[in-house]
Length: 84
Image (cartoon, one colour):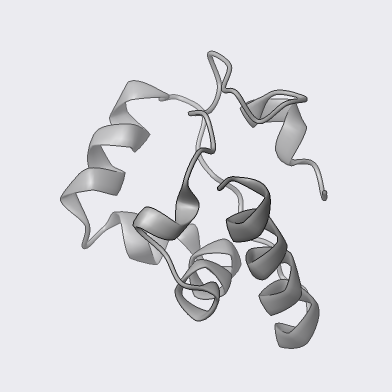
């Protein structure tokens, strides 16, 4: 799962570096989450909910994952399903 657990914890339950990842489907579809994972800063800049999360976990910030679109979309789909 990439290096998600470094900040979000081994069970994705959150740490001081990153929020828990629960019910991602509540806010994301696979295409939107894949786009976020590719360039998180662009989403944070225009989304109040993400800005609040970013401030809470500062100075850590979500890194972008510059991988091919298809594997990123598959990762996003996996994360959405895994956090239901």
